[in-house]
Image 1: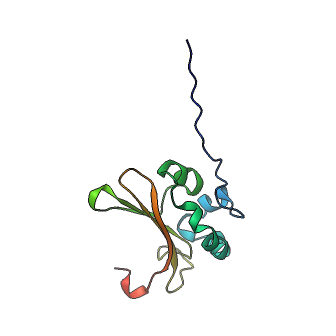
Image 2: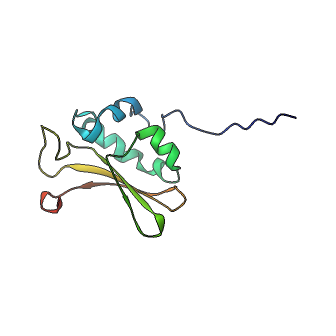
Length: 120
């Protein structure tokens, strides 16, 4: 007897009007694509809540930064504006931060302006 299981996975088109492949190529926001779609991303944030870690990685790629927090929660951050490591860095960049539960489900998704004074 053979049993096949098919998962319900999305093909990286979780967010309307946002190209997953272009997003992934724009590491740290250095190429400017992420900044051009920031308003569209802001209107789609609710769609990220409840997604699994695997779905996020498929759609957005590896985070630019990640942090392990108490009780095995994780924070994934993706720079929208050019990160401080980019050649064309501008003051007070924006970034998307996702908070994942201990079982890898997105609990919150927010876009923040990072004040230069708080960078390190």
